[in-house]
Image (cartoon, rainbow, N blue to C red; front, side):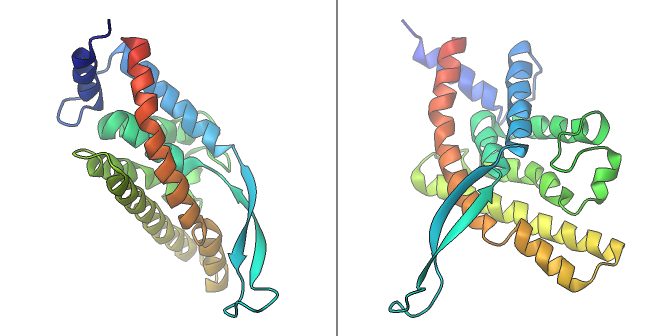
Length: 219
């Protein structure tokens, strides 16, 4: 028979909300798995289409327009990791991913290497660190639909605000015209915030059954 009380105690310790991070074989395996998830998400694209409102007049024949989207699910994976293993382990996994990209392996979307810090989209990657903290902190006391929505919203705002400011900073350094900057912001942020929120919301919800399965398999 499964000792559910022991599993809960182990799970609370694994989340490490108020405990010092302890490196064990189990935590290394799970963090390694999370790093692998981030890398896979970086090079995964979801193609889908949906209708958008294209006119303010409902009687207009072009009132609805079919829009094709290509979505890279990095942000939902970050939220999933934050909800699954908590802020300390989650931030550690993101730091490993960033260090790998800046030193040894081309795990970023446009490659890797120390020079990647001057890429316009690097701010979005750096923003994963505070986003992990904010999402896991928001979910610390309650895990319900409202709290999950709040965590997803705050996480999305954190990533995109930091990402946009970093993009503007890089544009200033490279002396790019404002027209280029606005185009990059629309491409990197824009409607993507809506997709990040929706997919991030469901990714956080998914973390709960995955967490239970993880600990049942390890228990």
